[in-house]
Image (cartoon, rainbow, N blue to C red; front, side, top):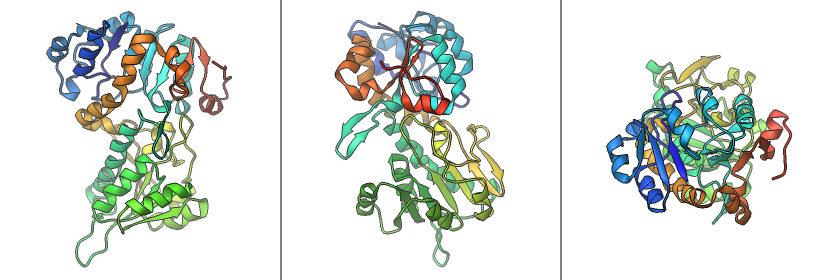
Length: 369
């Protein structure tokens, strides 16, 4: 199979869809890897490293998209890339279709086979996991507290709070909405900094687990609208970490709720890839990461892990490469026939929408595979 790796074109995105080791392993299995010149530089891998691993370096994205049977990316295809997609082409990347109807319609129109990292499921020790989403969720969750602490600083228009406090001065207060991978990592970093942390979820078994593994400055609270409104005025930093796989995130914090929050409080909405769990959230970039509504600083960068590109690229490739090798060997459908968790990753093919939550989000017809 001809596997293509174009440069990412989303604003401030420095990751790359395939590392040189992936090129080496694919070429050893008889596949050809086409890498756009400069695609790996943001992650610290120049063209010559890819060439040494066996890749063919092409000058432009147009060439890579035109020749490749499978495209390996990191972020969803941007509008400039839509015309490059062609019928039957496998695109293996994050899509987050439920948050973007225009992207969904464009991919359906181009009749690609969209294999989405974020909806591939596999069994884990504590239930179903999302193995290709998990590494980026770990990074985004850790970064959420890091970025939140930064934007609580007064020069960033925050409250002027040091999350860990100092002797004689109480620590900052962090409210985490969602106890999954993102929320757990955010709470862990916040607690390690010395903040008082409340983590909310609706899964009682998950909260029992978190009670066991978290430090004493982390408290679990069952999430409901009344509880959220009770703790919003308490929080200096709110981390939105809600995920319904493949679906648009529910709004847990409304525009009206901002009025009961502290002036200069910070919201980091990691759920923004799926539309955001705060009503006033809108996608921002690393270049312009924040805006203020009703005195509350909103940080809603849609590709947070892109800022730590080397770490993120390695973490992502550790998870995606085994699947990429299998797809290159057989195509996606033979894998799907044997693995129902992988079949959930095929969100659409040949103009047919196969993902139920995406169809519900955009009122589009779902076709059974």
